[in-house]
Amino acid sequence: MFKNKNDIEVFRNKIWLSSPTMHGDEQKWVADAFDKNWITTAGENINEVEKAVAEYAGIEYAVALSCGTAALHLAIKLAGEKLYGQARPDQGTLQGHKVFCTDMTFDATVNPVAYEDGEAIFIDTEADTWNMSPKALEKAFEMYPDTRLVVIAHLYGVPGKLDEIVEICERHGAYIVEDAAESFGSLYKGKQTGGFSDFAAISFNGNKIITGSSGGMFLTNSKEYAEKVRKWSTQSREAAPWYQHEEIGYNYRMSNVIAGVVRGQLPYLEEHIAQKKAIYERYKEGFKGLPVSMNPYDSVNSQPNFWLSCLLIDEEAMCRQVRSDSEAVYISEDGKSCPTEILEVLAKFNAEGRPIWKPMHSQPIYSMHNFITENGSGRGRTNAYIAGVFSDVGSDIFRRGLCLPSDNKMTPEEQDIIIEIVRRCFE
Ligand SMILES: *Cc1c(COP(=O)(O)O)cnc(C)c1O
Image: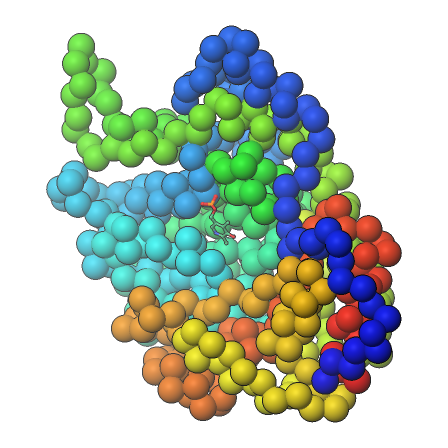
């Protein structure tokens, strides 16, 4: 229960969850685009960022697109075409085929499966990295052995259990689409996320580790795949004297102005990661003695980019909290708190937190879709969820977890105040 001693002032400048951090070079490259009049979806900034990202990530090809969602769409479409061919060029490539998807993530990870007329089956989360559970994935292959596509995300910048997931997918002859939108710069066994499949996406959305204001990239080691995505993203024009179209096209290419912002940001990626890591460590230290833990990662095999710092409240320290599809209420209790209370109190002090991504299997648009836990089918969780009874890991993290203000520009002093506010929620 939050106990206000009236000695904490409201932040004059809002403390953001994660806002853009500009350095000046961005404007130089944007100005360069203006000077050369390359105000279009081609130009030197685009060529340079494609080269620089591929080099940095240790991946052969990077294709600059309008956003991470576009990159995921074309990655999933392409995987579908490679697996199932393209019976009709004016239809989705997945045509009812099942696709195993990360459950606890932003809906942009999985919506492209629907764009391509596939059927997303949601796979429960594991507690060690908050990503797709290899055990639940194995269970899903037992139940649906014909499935050939798996879409995974690395949540909040923390790499998932890649060794296990890659092994399972190889054994079942399945392709992986890797959503590295939140994890650009994160490493697993020394290798960049996004490099564990030939269908990967990163994002330069405004709140990501580096930004172009918007933008994203498709990453692959296949020249053929890179060329295909580049063609699809520019309206699928064939080599002909007129606009000749044999495939459905998209207007998904990155603008050279946006690429200028990305070009200016790229040299600061490592600096941003170091800042985010320091924020995570400071929270971890500051919360010692509280009945909470930070979002976990595999410290032996992975180096996250620490994009967002998250908190998980111990079960015993949770006050009663009920969430419907649009509202949340809680009952204050001495010595206990809950995400709803902490988010509410942070907002009162002009600081921005965020709930954990609500699992896809409990989203109304996907309520008809199957959901697989380590124990098998977890379909019909919605009722149990309303009653406050859980048997899946994702819903439990959603219920007890939250994202903390994780802005690079937050000072240590400001972060100390955030820590004190959270501490007082448990008084
Ligand atoms: C941000 C994000 C995306 C989408 O990226 P955009 O560039 O905003 O389209 C996809 N997946 C995850 C997990 C994200 O966080």
